[in-house]
Image 1 (tube, rainbow, N blue to C red):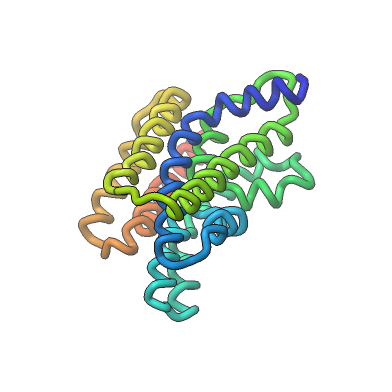
Image 2 (image 1 turned 90 degrees about the vertical axis):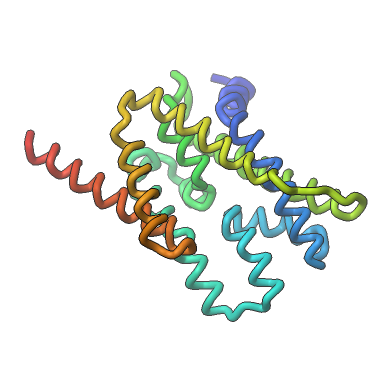
Length: 229
């Protein structure tokens, strides 16, 4: 498959991410720039950090001059889930050689959902295909934040409700996951873990608690199925 065809395949796979990342990226770029930072800090952060939740959180850290320890611990807890993502993709990334570090760096929630829900087109180098998808998703985020930062220099925009775009994106990716696995079990486990974590754990730790709970249940289920064979 030629590079143009490969790019086209990857682009079509990432269109839902495009429509989710760009609006949220615009919101982030706009907010950071409106907080008093030069416009280019927004795309620069998106290139070097590439973590939407952390970047939004960083705005509050910057405004309140939070200590380094608080920033480091919060960022670690917020992104701990990516460790689980990486563990589940060890085999998938096994033959990606030099691009593996970038694939790991660019493994966001949405990219993970894409890589685990789609089948690679026949005749395509998995390494090039994964790399192309990761770069496209990364570029959507950087472009969105740059647009938002530049817009903040000339216009005033009401951003209320714009964060729903990310929720809508997750709904689309969840549907794609269901089409592949054809079972409700993972989604029931995820819903139950999120629901009870929301009830039992402070909101700032809810996501981490839900991930740990869901992962623990999945490990137990997998263990029973594995040893029952």
